[in-house]
Amino acid sequence: MKLSIVVPVYNEAENLEQLHQAVHNALDCLTHVEWELILVDDGSKDDSQHLLENIQQEDQINTRVIELRRNFGQTAAIAAGIDHSCGDVIILMDADLQNDPADIPMMLEKIEQGYDVVSGWRVNRQDKFLTRVLPSRIANGLISFVTGVHLHDYGCTLKAYRREVLTGFRLYGEMHRFIPAYAHSVGAKMVEIQVQHHPRRFGKTKYGLTRTLKVVLDLFTVKFLISYANKPIYLFGGAGLVLMAGSALTLLYLVVRRLLIGTSVTRSPYLPIAIMFFILGFQSILMGLIAELLVRTYHEAQSKPTYTVRRAIGFTEE
Ligand code: UDP
Ligand code: MG
Image (cartoon, rainbow, N blue to C red; front, side):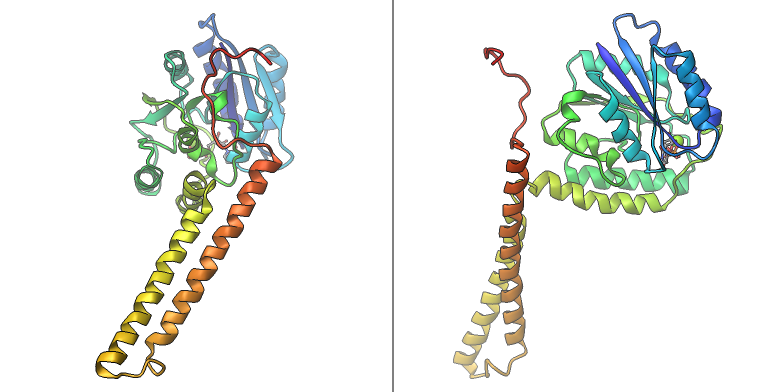
């Protein structure tokens, strides 16, 4: 098995040596695994860059380093690491020693059992309750509900993926936490395992409460992309039909009222409302049609299939 461990690093100087050692301790005994540790320096302003270079110099067999030109954020750093990796299995992990590399062998066992995604779950999360743990619980519930993929801990970076389920989409914004939801949408088999979590001993956390807001906004995008990216007309057209039905019902009400009690149709405040509903509904359907055009351009320009294949049996190479 070929394994790549991708770790984003932003101002983590005090943690790097120990992290490197911990990964070796966890993996050196696994003789059947060929592994690489990809450390992505996300424009650190402390000594991290220099330290990473040293670590790589001393361990050229297993360690690779990527230096980004500036701070692009955790998601972009992870994406850079994945793009440069060569493993069939990719494990994502934080650099701050809050995740424990000792959990990796257990995750690999699950992959060997045939799972495509092994999601770490920090049962005893060691972070501040009010600003981190509580918002994260709410976010997990919300993400599980909206995407229909029920995981206890979307926020835990420590997760393992088979490469196939990671290709086919790009990561934007704060979206690395939604990878399991994407993976599920392409048909990945998932399992959740409990992993250890330690308090941060060195360096500072880079996030606070505002991240939860970003996560909620990203959730809109993800839900849209997963559920409607291939058929936007269902969403826009659906909304359009509802609005037009509202318009028709309002008009019907006005006409019936005119016939029964003789109230004027043209002087009723409901008439402009009915017209507004009609225009909005019509616009919405048009928007759906334009979105359908975009989807076709997207799939056809990149020859992207609208499905994913797990295995093809009985075909020859050509
Ligand atoms: N990180 C990064 N770029 C950033 C912010 C964070 O590469 O702009 C890395 C950071 O070095 C760490 C991981 O992302 O390895 C998670 O960050 P942190 O520990 O601050 O998040 P928390 O564990 O508090 O959620
Ligand atoms: Mg951390």
